[in-house]
Length: 145
Image (cartoon, rainbow, N blue to C red; front, side):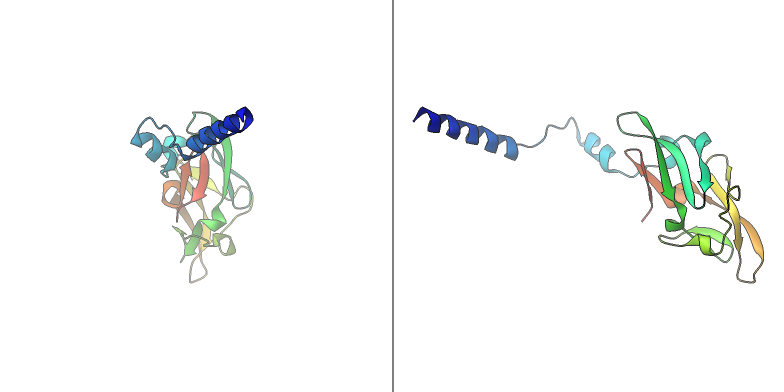
């Protein structure tokens, strides 16, 4: 009988733990963990690079303060609108813009630049602000929706 009583106590405690709400210090803590943040506030602007094709590499800060290496495929974030880089989820800018190593540059650490083909076939230098097409959440890069 004592064994059944102990088992019942364990089940009661387990049920209480499963149904308990997590302890959260403030609503701001929840919002901070879920919001998508501006790149310049959470990623090191001086470290952006594109060592291979359309992959943007950098270092971004997680919510716990640690810096971690991150990368994002810009071909999934950017498109080409008549020779201009634009935010376009799944845009495939690589189909008509330079992506060879060394073809991208960074202006003030907040914009990515390359050369794209316009509607008339001419090649135009173009830049896009990183915050316009990408975001960071807990140190993880992603394309804006």
